[in-house]
Amino acid sequence: MLAREEEVSSNVAMNGRPEDAGPATDEVLRVSGVTKRFATDGGRSTLTAVDDVSLQIRRGEVVSLVGPSGCGKTTLLKMMVGLVKPDEGEIALRDSLVRGIPHNIGFVFQEPALLPWKTVHRNVDLALEAKHMSSEERKVAVERYLELTGLGEFGSFPPYQLSGGMQRRVALARGLVGSPDVLMLDEPFVALDALTRSDLQQELANLIHETETTTVFVTHDVDEAVFLSDRVAVMTARPGRLLEIVDVPLPRPRVLKDVRSDPHALELRDHIYDLIESS
Image (cartoon, rainbow, N blue to C red; front, side, top):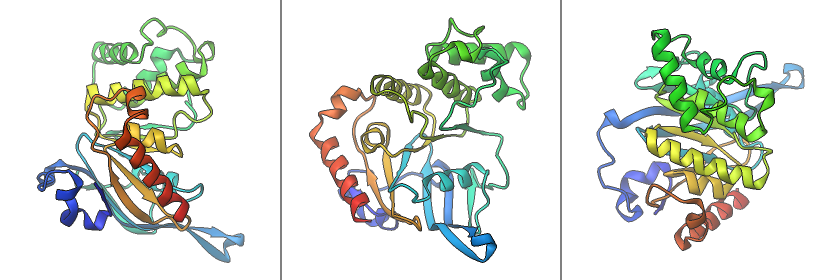
């Protein structure tokens, strides 16, 4: 059930995954040999943040990126989103190379990044401005995702009148409202209290299951990764390389309190911790 990405084809049978992972059309996002370097010391030297990473994301699956602090998880995600250009390799979204920010992705930052002078409804609607939709279609879509995230009664509120957890729900609604090919999340629950974080983890799991949204999730929380993911991509300390892909063959829908006590989930968690500590 544990396999390195390059060994997936030979190990899928013992991983408990189908021997045929599906046709090529199931691949939504492909990362091929991606490397990113940043200039340091006034441009006199370079620091390699991500080194030769390859990863495939299939339609409808959830893949988490975990690893030691500073291993390049967020940099890799930003390259997938098109915010950062790789120095080597390429990234393709549905067979189109990512050059700039694709229109058909959703992105949720570490901070909600809401516009305080716009209502909750308008903040979510911003994600639809580039889409060819009528005002009524947009209204229906926004209201649907406000309901799904428990914000149906708060559409007319300004964000600053909401709690931190509710603001994260607004950001999730905005990320999902356009029915993106891939939803990218960069530690969206960081700095929340434990109870609010647990509630939002469960809500996100429910949303992903209901909408069948392909998702890439960056987190430092291994328990969170195991709970949410179909696969967990473990990265090494800088320069960030792909150390191992860990399958999470737990049934869906998932309930957080059940997963926390599941012996298989605990085994996976311990294995991932061991990988991170050894990297």
